[in-house]
Image (cartoon, rainbow, N blue to C red):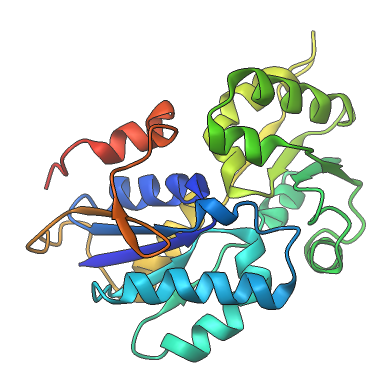
Length: 260
């Protein structure tokens, strides 16, 4: 079984790592466009075009499913991707985990890129799944870029700035950008308050991986396909897993040979 993932950059690593944990035999295709990252400030049509280009490059390797491992691309490109590839290849999008955060009870925050914070899409999700809850939308200036570059100082500065905008009484924080899951522990450390329980973080990677495998009806013990178990594409060109990806546990885990 081969599963392709699309994102602007290394934000696809958490979903890819979750797929590898759940289905060690799956071959993965990581198709991104880091030279154009971030996609958030671009027009909707430009984002859709770039996501389609990444997806078409991955399709040359005949994946059995396509995961859109990016919140921004899901908003702007999911209909076009499904029109292009379904029903032959299921296309799975990424949605911020607002519903489970609301189920925790109490106030919660949504950390997202400045382009997503306050957007009609995010406000609609909050209205649909967290009506009546106290929700704080937190713009995380520069955090996705810093994670993409594995810039330690910039990550710390962006995390601390977002933490300062987060109310001390929140019980949960939604990570509304897939890049943020790569620094979840650092985010959690910044949110800890003396004498108070740490808020629960809600990412999307595990749910996306589970949904992809459900769509494929894939048993976790299915054998590995022949050929490479990991292919990395940058704007359609085969490359090694970038050095920035290896900065994170998810990237290092994917770089290791598949155990299957």
